[in-house]
Image (cartoon, rainbow, N blue to C red; front, side, top):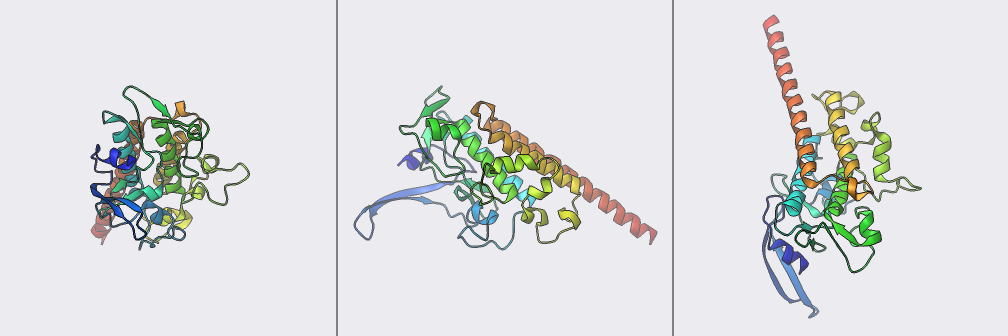
Length: 285
C-alpha cells in the first residue's frame, strides 16, 4: 500500500511506470495484492554488474564506462525528482542494483517503493517508529539504523554505495570487506594512484577487447582514469557517515552530467585526431 501511495503521485522517465493494481486470493486462499508495471525487458542492474552471482540471467555483454555513467545519471535524476521536484518529497529508502530496472534502450527505472516514506511539508526529515534495519544490508545509512532518522540524505548515502558498486563491481557485502575494510574505505585507499586496480575489470575491457594496462581500446588511459576518479570521489562524498556532509541529489546529477560531458568531449576530440591521422596516411600514399 505504501508503494501504491507513492507511485500514484509521481511521473518521471526514470521511475518505473505503474499500469494498475489488483487484489484477490492466492492458491492457498490468502489475500493477495499486486502492482502491474510496464515490462522492462533488460532486467535489473544487479545482473549486469554481477552476472556470475546475481542468480539472474546473464547478459550477453557487459556495461561499458559510458553506459554506467548514463545509468548513474538516470538513477540520480529519479532521486532528484523525488526529493526536490514534487510537493511532498518521497524518500525511497531501498536504493540498490536490484531495484534499478533497465528498459529496451538501457534507460534506468527506479522501482520498489515498498519502504518509501513521505516528508511533511517543510520538514527535512522524519523518524521511523522502530530503530533497526529498514532496507538492505550494506546500503542503509548509519543514521537510519541507529536513530531511525529518515531524510533525503538517507537516499544519497544508498546512492553513493550503489555508485561505488557500479564502478568497482563489488557488493558492499563482498567477502573481502572484513576487519574494518568496507567498500567505502576500499575505494578511498585506492584513490588516486590505484584507480585502475579498484575499478571493475569488465568495465575496463568493455566489449572484451583490452589494451595493455587495462585501458579501453581507442580511449586514452588518462581519460578513463580521470573519469573514474571523478565518479569515485562523488561516491565517497555521498556515502560519508556524516549526513550533513553529503551532497544534494541535484548536485549529484550536475557532477555526473559534467563528468559524462567531459568524457564525451575527449572521445570526440580523439575521433577527430584519428580521422586527421587517417587522412594524412592516405595523402602520403
